Image (cartoon, rainbow, N blue to C red; front, top):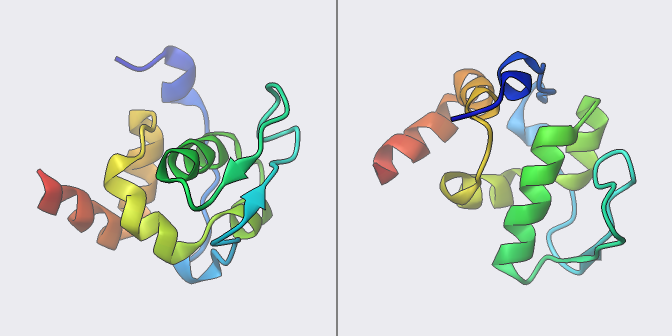
Length: 108
C-alpha cells in the first residue's frame, strides 16, 4: 500500500530514455536534494547499490537533468523489474516508456 503522498506526488520523467546517460561504473555521490541521508557513496559494480541509487533518483528527481546526470538507459532497462518504486512512479514511467512495461510484464 502506498502513502497518500506517493499517490499525489508528481514524478519527474525524461522525454526519452535515450537522454539518460549517467555513469555506468565507479562510485557516485548524489547531491543532497536527491539523497539527504548520511553521506553515502554508491558503487555501480554492486547491484544492491545500483538499485538503491536508481530508486532514490527516480523518487526524488526534481528536474529531467537530475535523471540525465545520474541514470543510464541501459542500466535502467536491465534493473527495472527489481526496482522498489511507489506504484504511481512505476506507472508514470511505464506509461511513457512502454518498453519498461513490457519488461515488467515479461517478468510476471
